[in-house]
Amino acid sequence: MTKIGLEIHCQLTNLESKLFCSCKANYRDKEPNANICPTCIGLPGSLPRLNRKAVEKAIIIAMALNCQTPKKLAFFRKNYFYPDLPKNFQITQLNVYGPTSIGLDGKINVADKEIRIRRIQIEEDPGRLIYEGISEKNLITLVDYNRAGTPLVEIVTEPDFENEKQVRLFLNILSDLLENLEVADPSLDGAMRADANVSIEGSEKVEIKNINSFHDCEKAIHFEITRQKSLVDRGINVPQETRHWDDKRKITTSARSKESELDYRYFLEGDIPWIIFEKDTIAKLKNNMPESISSKKERYISKYAIPPQVADVLSSDKFHSDLFEQAHDESNAKEIANLITTDLMGLLDTREKREQSKLNPKHLTDLAKAIVENVITRTSAKTALQEIVKSGKPLSDIISTFDLGNVSDESEILKMIDEVISEEKQAVEEAKTNPQTINFLVGKVMQKTKGKANPVITLNLLKEKILG
Image 1 (cartoon, rainbow, N blue to C red):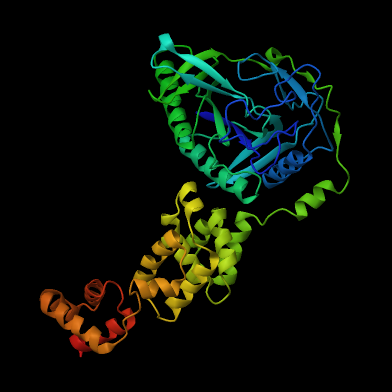
Image 2: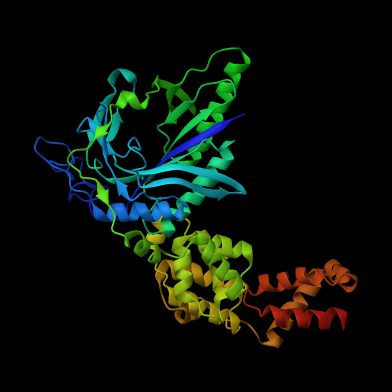
C-alpha cells in the first residue's frame, strides 16, 4: 500500500512586510541582498517583532481547511546549518507543549476522498541558493537573502494520498483556495512549494525536496514509487532518507539521512512572547472571510442557472470570478459566464497575459448585451474579445473598425445560401431525410459571412429552401 503525505510551504504574498521585520515581503525583482536588515539576517542584538497581519492570514487559512486554532500560540527555534539560513536557526512553530501552532486537525475533500490536515504552522522562509557553472568542477553557489524572513505557512497533511494524481488534484484545489482567500498568489515564482513523503508497503518513509512545480511534484512522486517498488521486489532495503528531485534528469537523488525532531534541537523562541488571542478575534476574522469557492459555485447554479461544470470552472479562478462579479446582472449572468469560460480563459491563461490585458468588466457587459440583442454573432464576439484584450477599445469602435456587425438582411443571407446549396449538393440531399445535416449547411453559410450571419435567420431560411 502506498502512503503519501505532503508538506506545503505557502508564502503570504499579499502582506507588505516580512514576518519579523519591516523589510518588504515582495522580494522579487530586487537586486540580490538588497531587501535585508539586521533582523532578517540575524545580526547580533537584533530582535524580531511579529507581523500581526501574518497571524491573521494564517488563521483564515486554518479556518478554511477546517482546522482548530488553539487559544495561544508559541514560536520555537529550529536549529540547523544551511547557507541560505542566515541565523543558523529558523523561527517556526512546534506542538511540543500541547497544541500551540496556528492550525490543527483539519480536513479537505478531494474527489470524494478526505485528506486530513495534521497541522498548519507559521514560519519564516529562508534565503535562496543560486547555482552557477557549466559543470560540477566549476560550480559555484551564490546566496541571496532577500527572501529570508518572508511570511510563510507550512501545511502538513497526513499520509492519506495513494497516488500522484490525487496529490496533483489536491495541490490545484489548495492553490485555488489560497488565492480565493486573498492571502497569497500561488502563481508567483516560489510562492507555493511542496515536499512529499513517500512510502510503500515494506519500505521506510522517504522525503522528496527541491520540487519546483505541481507538475514536478507529480513526476517526482511517480518516480519515487516506482523506485521503491523496484527495490522492495528485489529484496533491497529502502532507507529513511531525504532525496532531491533532479529536474533535468527527472529522477530523485539521495541527499542525506532523514533528520528527526531531536536533531533540530527545538527550543522556545525567547524573543517572542506567547500569543494569546482576544475572545472575539477569530470570530471577527471568520465573519470577514471571502465567500468560499463552493459557496460561489452553489450561488452561480441556483441564482443564475449556470451549468454546474461552467460554475465549477468560474468559481475556482479568482481573477475571472472577480470579473464576472463586476460585469454581470441577473439578466446577463449566464451569457457572461459562458464568455469567460469559453473564450476569455483561453486568451488570459497566464499571469503575464492577465497583467497586459486591457479588458475591463464593462467590456464584458457590453459584449453580452450585443450578443443577446443580435448586434453581433457569437463568432464575431470572439473576434471582438481578442481585440478588446489587446487594445481596450470600446466594443462599438471594434465592431465598426472590423466590420463585425450582425448580417440580418435576408436577401444577403439568401445569396450565400444559394452558393452553399450549389456547392454542397450531397449534404442538401441528406438534409431532406436528416434535418440535423442542416446545421452543417448553417456552418458553411457562417464561413462565407465570416461568422456575421444571424444564425437563427440562416437556419430558418435554409429550412424553407430545402424542406419547403
